[in-house]
Amino acid sequence: MPKSTALPKEKKLTVLCRIEPGCLGPDGLDHIADFCRFANQELKQVDSNFIIWLPLPRYDKSLAEMQYSVNQKQLSHDKAAQYLDHFGCDLDDFEEHFHEKLSVMIDEFLAKINH
Image 1 (cartoon, rainbow, N blue to C red):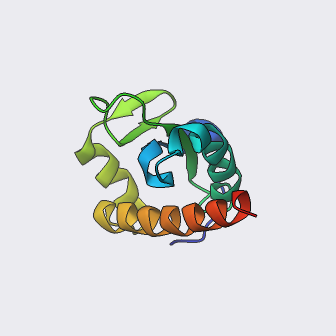
Image 2 (cartoon, helix red, strand yellow; image 1 turned 90 degrees about the vertical axis):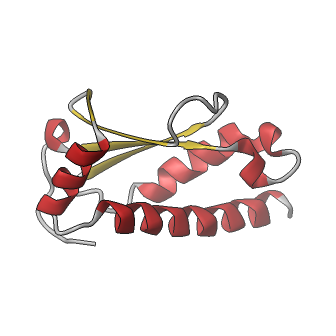
């Protein structure tokens, strides 16, 4: 992912990512809030020069898994793709990169709580 000077907060892309409790196993509902706090800390180091990560539990499946906004103004999928293109990122690659990171964070979190 690109390295550049950090943007001011109001110009950063906020990525709201709703995470299914089930991804943490059968008792995921008991751990999802703690996992989202853990993920928030871990994601602070990922593309923080132009991204604000907002991992939240996905209790309502009718809501989108990923939602993008800038300065509290929601962006369509196309507008989010244009924004990321400005930083040399493809939206599909960006989401794939996030899901890979999410998988690693889930493994780390589960290892932590199972000890």
